[in-house]
Image (cartoon, one colour):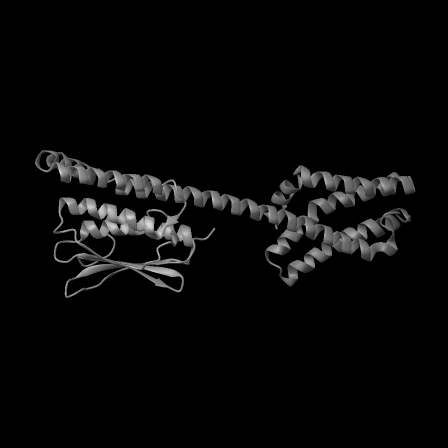
Length: 335
């Protein structure tokens, strides 16, 4: 309960709580003062009101965190003690009956103390939960943005870009038509990448456009090695986080070889989609320094929580050792 007290007092210091509490307390104290004109009774009631504000909401929050019978009993004892002090204190100390906390009204005052403390505790906890959710949402938004920028940095690989630009320079002399096509493909891929980091989500069809643009660029430089066979479901309107599949696809293009083409499929199942990607070269676990799989897994977690799944495993195809990546994409990212 020691942790509840400081945070509760801090929350009660907020003007939207301090003002109603002060007005209610002043109303009780002023009524007692006008009815009895006794400073002792008035002062005792002020003390009870102050002890209520200091203790009851904090104890109620402590109970709310773990509503065990022992804790509930403590809350009841605190409320009973304050009720006894307000109603019975004047009789014991000065043989006088108070006006506001008239002894026959003790049961009602006891219930009022419990209810008021519980309502204040609930209000403070709801505010704290809202702040936590807001902070978590802001943190997730920052992580998503960082992941997008990381995806962009990863796939604007200087080595790949410089090699592509060098090849385009050679094609300008040897085959201007191929050079023109390469420049258009590069421009298209860059346009899609920059669109992706500005969007919270986009249709799966746009994601596949990025993969196709990247493949065309690789194939222009080495069409024997970078062969691609696709089997894609016709409905590709499913919203997905932009560039979420790009690290897996780039891994497949980078680590696959000319022994077999890369296979990419998309299968609809109960409103969701299963994306599969196979490339030659047996999977032997995460590579040192590699971030593609980890980035994809983190982005799926940020977008879908536990709703999405990524599995990467070694899988032979037609007798050729290879790597199979499977991504289960739910119908909608979480809000």
